[in-house]
Image (tube, rainbow, N blue to C red; front, top):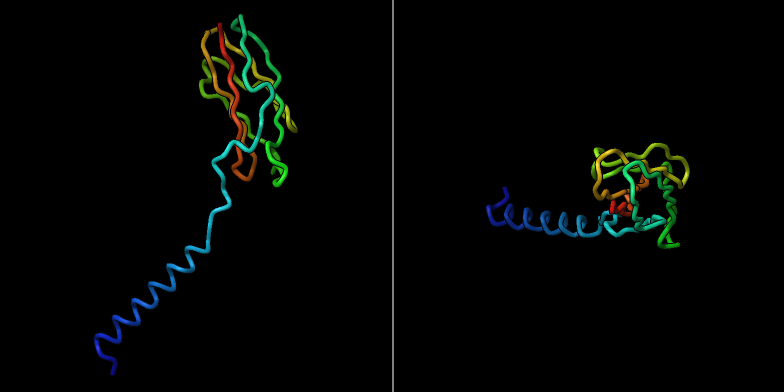
Amino acid sequence: MKTMSAWVSGGLTMLVLAGLVLVGCESTKTTDNVITINPASVTVTNDWATVVFTASLSSTNIALALPLVWSVSDPARGTIRASGGLTAIYEGKNLGGNNTITVKDQGENEGIAAVIRE
């Protein structure tokens, strides 16, 4: 029969081993803006402006996991009208103001751009 100290010692050993295993399991997700959007920033002078954005890699040590998902911070100010491959078409709406464009690949890498309404 094991003593209480043997159970505690064994439990502590298991906790240490589990901690070591978890330390070796790092996430591959990055929060860096690995995708570059061109143009990075565009200034428009009318509400219904249309802008074509193109995505590319900021770093050559990874590959884009297609398809890309494009989004806007404020759909009331503008939307992504069409997208395919590395390109998206943004169309402003009848409400002035700035909008942030975000693109993500299937590996959660992302990039951002800005539409600035004068």
